[in-house]
Image (cartoon, rainbow, N blue to C red; front, top):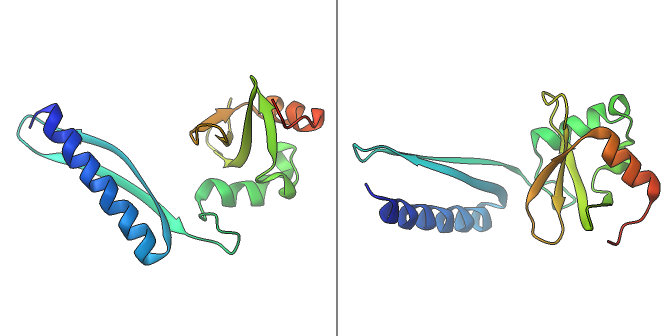
Length: 132
């Protein structure tokens, strides 16, 4: 299996993941695809049910709701917007096993998820400036 074939299969699998999302009312995230010389490949998909607020219920989101005070946040900070390096982010959850950068946030400009140190997010929330 060559790189071009892997890219084509990956694109088809991502399209299938999107159609399943719509049909079943869940939030799925297609991830990496690895392949071997023998023609075998692995495609990882993770997902969760969609909550009442329209967001997927994830392990990181639940961890934030349960442990927010321990990390110096309020439960209401989930989804809060903050500015970092001239870009705006929204808090998605906590990665409890990450020592240095446990806060997971999505960039509102490009839609990618990034990780942050707790102190940096707390400073940005206290500053209160949301727009870059």
